Length: 71
Image (tube, rainbow, N blue to C red; front, side, top):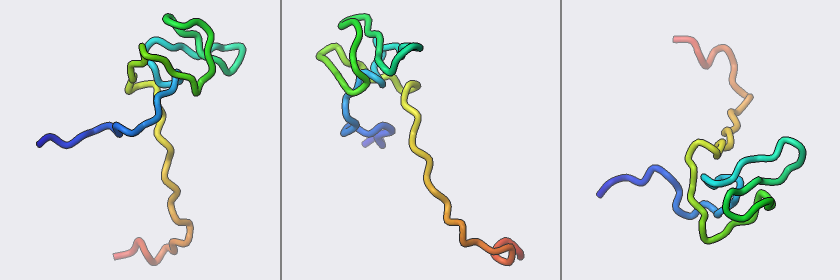
């Protein structure tokens, strides 16, 4: 069984769709299929584009001391 790389439970959003392109003037998405939409909208033509989603960065604990990195 192959390991899944992408989260199948990720919410469908026009922001991540292959057919959507962000507008430079407003926070809306310009869609080839539906026209102007909100970022959180989606439709039946939704196709996930891997390169449009920027994953959230994990926070690193800031309580490290210089002694923690010495051998």
